[in-house]
Image 1 (cartoon, rainbow, N blue to C red):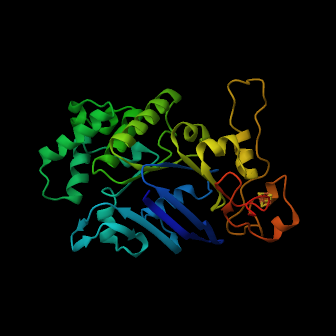
Image 2: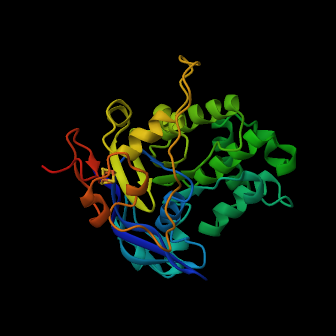
Image 3: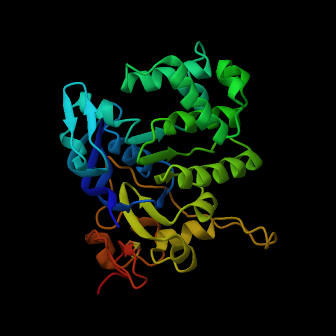
Length: 336
Ligand code: SF4
């Protein structure tokens, strides 16, 4: 199966007044076609920075320091000064103009907050027209609207609502519009960053179901960024757990939930409420994520880990194959 995305040794840093914080630290990842990868971890673990790095949209004062990101595209991508041939595209070698042509048409990103991502002065239809004309200035407005209504109807939004403005939509509907904008150019890879965080549980469940249907309909490969492991249990084929900018564990969703290897994954899963055991007290992970400007030596998780050994305080564990066939970065495992 073709890998739509491969990331090798990616490092992203933010320069702060206190020093340099390494938000993504030598991340390695591959994402086969048509699979959904869930990216999870506590706030500040680097998952959104990783998502933005794939788009080359790391906000200032962040910067991609080193590494490789390869996106596979299945048709030639025409941009204003030439063509990006189909096949593996080294994202970090692309110019800003080339990236502009890839964003939306090959990789789309759905941001967390639909209200701040939509322009209150523009009708929903106008958003879709602008998005399509930015990639294809020759497309007629009528054709762009027709494509928009096709996508919106797949998301349960009536065609006549293209003339409405963002404030006339509920939070769930606005998020559906954002998903529609992400899909209208038929990207190969969709990165969805906490798509249901601000929604109530009923709308959240509906939107997650719709995302699954759209994934099949549009033949998508997806990265779903969330701190909600329950969401990933329902939607992801594979899960990657990040801690302090590093990959802690990657495995299939089923294996990771049934047989987590990394102590941090185990602790995260213990914090998920179990509706079948309402009497069970909720667990928590003692301590706090490390200060990335002044991180601890060795395994970043060692100050919080109940299994920490001497080696954990001195040596960073590498991401190696685990007994379950996944990958884990922990001195307890991966010594095959
Ligand atoms: Fe815990 Fe050591 Fe594994 Fe880190 S490497 S998770 S400290 S056992």
